[in-house]
Length: 138
Picture 1 (cartoon, rainbow, N blue to C red):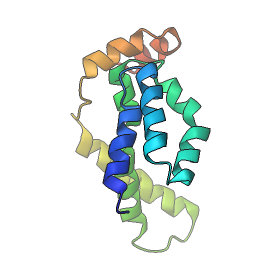
Picture 2: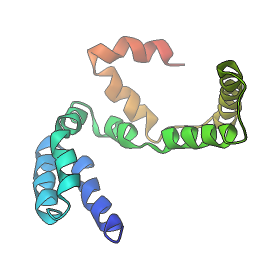
Picture 3: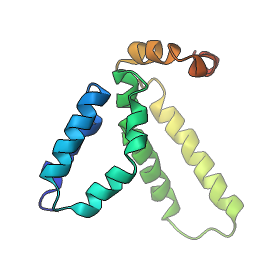
Picture 4: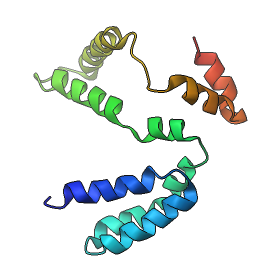
């Protein structure tokens, strides 16, 4: 935990790199700098092909993909309503979660993604995503 901030700062240089070539270079530096944490390095090495896939997309899309704040917020919100007690059956739990989702929709209405126009343009460049993007675009 004492190296957490420095470790995550170095790791951000890997997944936040402007190109795959820069990412690979940053990852090599990262592995050398943090060799003492072999377990963490091994996890990233084994799963690095998932990081490489991010570079199939533009920088604006990558930022949306690796930013997990919205997902973490939803999970925290679900924990908040489910920690209040026991549920007699699965249906009761699903009802509480459904109601929480409706509250979150109201709360987040009008929210935005930073650089959304650029994200949309980059998504529309991908033929395999274009139809899906246009289907949900308002």
